[in-house]
Length: 249
Length: 226
Image (tube, rainbow over all chains, first blue to last red):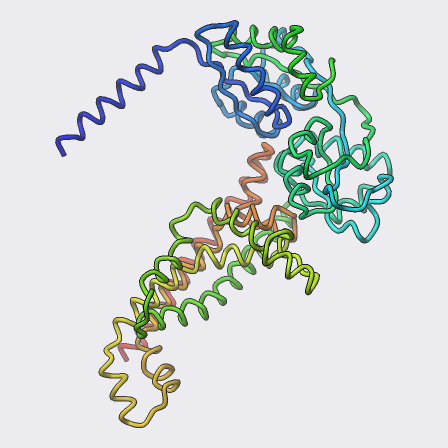
């Protein structure tokens, strides 16, 4: 039992040590940004010594729900305007800090060894038994897909075969494992599993898919958060995003 | 939204019920084997079968994906031979829930069988009962209370199963979206009012299970006393 107080002391000291360190910037970002934002981190941290980036990736709606319940995020980067608008309506953001920093496209993917789909209407075929997409109520990629399918008059047919994912990367994983015959993801996601899935076709969306970012209201690191947005918008940041397939806004 | 909450509840009860029925047969059989038979590797088998209780559900979920997935070694065979796909089906959810809750029945059954005095079984044999009759008329009735406790725990565990189920069965409303998964989805999507309804239904169901299990064991012990 003698050891116990010393363990406590070590714990207290390490916690205090972390607190005393320079700023940790927590970025809540859409799941589709996972690889690109991780690749942005070294460049940003090199330019801003003492600031460490922490990422929290998930579906945009999940991130919004977390922030609205007081999650200590400093910056919010969403995969659609709708979620950002909701956050702004709840006064969770510093409105002046909102910027669009990237565009993306929606694609229909199939497992790499499967027969191709020539058109969206092919999703009606009986061979296509299951279709993965983000849950429209909670995942922007699912909402984009639902919108496009409704416009094409195919939503009822797809809904009957839908397997809902909690974020776009989960839909990607379902297709990569061959458990579903097709799935809706962003063009940029395909590169993550390019030996397991391929693009069947580009899916036109009603509104362009653009990614906004904004500083979270009350963030103690608002200054650093603004610097990160500036870095993402800078030529160096845009070059990294382009490498991962994102298009300039 | 209300009707979909009831559908989720019905599905949860169906999955947990099937998993518990399977576990009753498998757990009692294996528990008896481990308690009454001596064979090499017995303790190793016990440890391996208890593993699902200790492993994180995500690890189990991954194992299941690799084994019964369409490209898994068992899943590929099932798909090619019978055209059967277990991932994203309620049967897949039953497999996940069965696996996770199995050790609870096994442990209870083994301990209960070990608590039955072998002298009584020998006496029954001397009086001319066959092996099956000894098991059904002597061993099982004496071990039953202990087994029942394990079975009820297993039912509760199967009802609340989340991690492995989500990985194996996904979340298809009306097909594989059980209560615990529906709650997770509603919270993830920021739909708090839906979450409130679901959480309320879940809590009431769990209280009902606890109460009925209490009555069941009371009724049983009263019967034994008489």
